[in-house]
Amino acid sequence: MDLRHDFEHTGGVLFRWRSALPFGLAGFVLIALRDYRHLGENGRFDGLWEAFCLAVGFFGLGIRAVTVGHCPKHTSGRNSKHQRAARLNTTGMYSIVRHPLYLGNFFMGLGVTLFFHDLFVTMVYVLAFGLYYERIMFAEEAFLRERYGDKFLAWATTTPAFIPRPRNWTPPDLPFSVRSVLRREYSGFFNLIVFLFIFEFLGDWFADGRVGVDPIWAVLVALAVTV
Image (cartoon, rainbow, N blue to C red):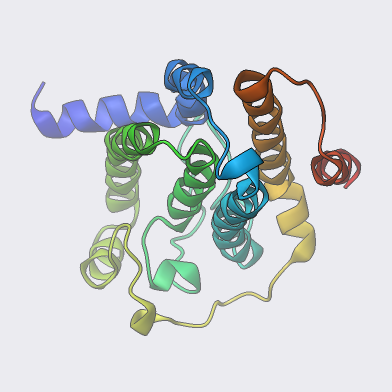
């Protein structure tokens, strides 16, 4: 099997298992938690750092929300069994970057890994994300190239794969749908809050042996559960 077909094949496999990346990094997370220390004397900077991590994660979630909020059905989504694209999206977020959903995923995961304020963990995440999603994006583009031909090639020629080019912005064809975002992105919001809550809880436990829940995190988890 030549490299092109090998990339397409492995990318297709990883596409079906792309949500498993966080679990694949579990070992590095446990190492980071074992050595977890609060920021500043008595952890006085912990709250600010946690807010920053949340902001990074929500930035990624926002990218995903803006993307899916303007997309028609059966295009951008969380389907994992097979590739699908009822139409080629080239406006809105897709006018400035070819893979906006994965860009959003990157920042959501980055927000979680930054929580540990450990450069090693962050570097492992960035490297793993690049290797993992490169194959997935390769397989997706092979599917789109076969389905849409010259139309895809013309779009791909002027639109970067992962680093946005804002000057290319073209207004989306469809109005923003809050309903679509709530239906398709709730799990991302829930997972982001729950993962950070768990790590905050375990971080306190490993750092100073106490078991407790900060009020702000209790509120955020309650919000994630009830939305």
